Each structure stands twice: as C-alpha cells, then as structure tokens.
Image (cartoon, rainbow, N blue to C red; front, side, top):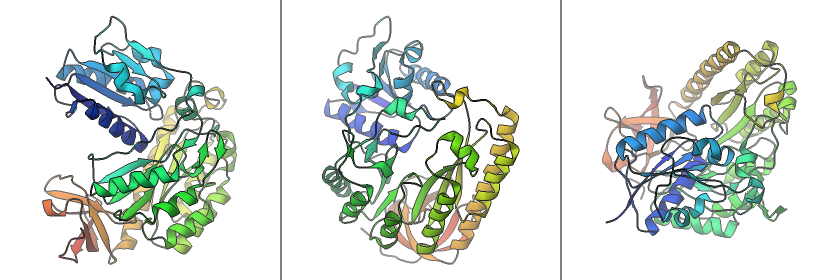
Length: 439
C-alpha cells in the first residue's frame, strides 16, 4: 500500500521552497502527498526560529498531526530543529529531528519508519553545513519561491539565523537558470527569488565567484516567466546598479522589500546593521526616482534593548516621511545565544506592545496611501487560485492586491485591468480591460 506524507511549514518563503523540494523527494520515493488534515503515515514539520514561540507552535502542530493519525511518524526539520534538537526531541510524539545538513537526506533517514522509545536526532554542528541545496516550490500556489542563496555571514546582534543555517552560500547561475526554465515549463508565471541574504549571492565555499546583478541579468532572459520578484534584500547590498537594472528590465517587477529594523542610527549600531539610516533613505530616493510607482516594503523591530522612547519616535518619524508602501513589524524578543539577549536596557513588554501598535497603524496608512496613488492606473494582474466569500485575489507587478468576483478561468492568468476603488477589505477593485487572457 502506498505510504502517505503530509507537510506543515512555519516561517519564511525560503522554508516554503524547501518544504516543496522535500515533498518532491518523498514523491520520487513513492509516497503520496496528502493535506495536513488527512491521515498520513509521515508528517514533516518545517520549523522557524525567527518568529516568537517556536516551541509552542511546534508542539501544537505535532498534537494536531497525531489527532489525524495517532500512529504516524513525526519528523521535525528546519531552523528550530538545528538550534534546539534536544528540546524538540522531548516533545511527545516526535520521532525524528533533522538539522540543517540532514533535512535533504530525509528519505535515507526515514525508510525504517519504526517508532523508537526516544526521538532520533541527526544534527551536525552548523559549521559543517556548507553545501548549497537547491529548492523551489511548485504546485503549491500561483507564484513559485526559488531558493538562490542560503546562510548568512552577518552577525546582527538579535539574529539566530547564522546559527541555524550556517555560512552564506549560493547556487550557480547556470543551475538556477535551468531551474527557472523548468518552472516556466510547468506553466507558472511568477518566480520570487528567495534566500537568507540574497544580495550576498555568489559565494561558493567562501569565495565570491558571481554576483546578484549577474544572476538577475541572466534570469531576465528566461522565456516563459512573465515576472521575477526579489524578496527581502539588505539596503547595503541593493546596489544602484541593481536598482537601475530592475527599472529597465523585461521581467523584474517594481517591488523591493528592504529591511530597515530601526530609523535610529544609535539602535542600528547596537544591532550591528551594516548601514545607517542615511543610506536607507538614499536607496528609497533612487528607487522612487527611477520607478515612481514602485512598491517598497520595510521590516522594522520595536523594543530592541536600549531603545528609548526618543529612539522609537525617531524611527516612527523617519518611516512616516519615507515614500514606502507597507511595514512588517516585529516586536523584539530575546533569543538564546545572541548578543542582544545579554544587553542592558530591556524595554518593558507594555512599551514594546504600544510601539508595535503605532507602527501597525502607520503601515495601514502607508498601504492605503500607496493604493490610493494607484487608482485610475492600468496594469496587469496575475490572479491566484484562492477563493473567499465569492472573491478571488491577484497582484499587480508593483504588489497592489486586487479583488474581483471569483472566476475559475482567471486562475494563474495575467489580465489587463484598471484599478478603480479601494474595497472594504482594503484591497483594490478592478475593471477588466482585456477579454483575451495571456497564455
């Protein structure tokens, strides 16, 4: 009888691309993938260490899996599995924990499927993890996340990612172009480039052999993909050459997501970020000069140790005055084995919460203003496959989320549209311009 496998992914786009690739390993080994809420023989849970309460989330997902299939074999992979393997092994119901280097050898480890009295741990020290393993998501949604880089050389004081994913390393451009062509053949029209620090692309065994600019120039020539989107990229690595190339490219869309983390140079210094606020403002100015309708997303952390009210207000004012489009707000939380966890000047939880609320409201204002600026303009919308309350959604190249009555013929199609008004869901309504769909 064919064995069944189900997956659950916590965390970032990179995790989604890796889960999808692990899923293909299982299919090649003869397993049948099923939804997480169905009975399966194996459940694979891909964890994250960046967001809060990794332990609690992991426990909850394990409990859910066992509810559907009490005898199932539960395997935990991902960043949290690398950082806290022993802690995870203690969770009731967990059978195996695989670290960063071992997760792509999951089939070799899992063949037995015999439950042992204690969870098995395969977890090498992160220093030994220096091989780039390609990954991309396919069949999960309209857009594909294509992993181009992994690991990080930076030592930001709040971050555990270098401990969980190891040194910066990349795929080779020729291989990534081949993967993009394979994705194009599957009918997918948009690829999101993903990694831990994608602007640092091009390191192979510690040596810089290629650059991010080389990569995007090569991908811009891939036929069949209508859109490439760059996921989060550090402001110091988003060079003017990259910005200029995106502005004139055939396939790269006008959308950047640039982590800021703080608008206070004092706090940026404490975080060991590799830029000052002036550089960030300069990048935004260059982007908007070349692409006035470009969408710019911002990551920001509130409540970092030593962040006085004045520092927070400096951040708020800085972001408020920048022509950015939305924020991802993270409330600082202490992480073991980070320098920040030992720093003085801990910010009270209530202040962290208040600051987070202020920035969430600012984000809503920024997004609304950006959407209002786009009304009346014409563009192409790529529709997703989701359906909720009779509506479906899609995105313009510059990441305006639109809604329209559900029509199965529109799924994964690019349609010319005029943006007409903002809906009560804070999305944008459209007037369809083209009867003919782009195949």
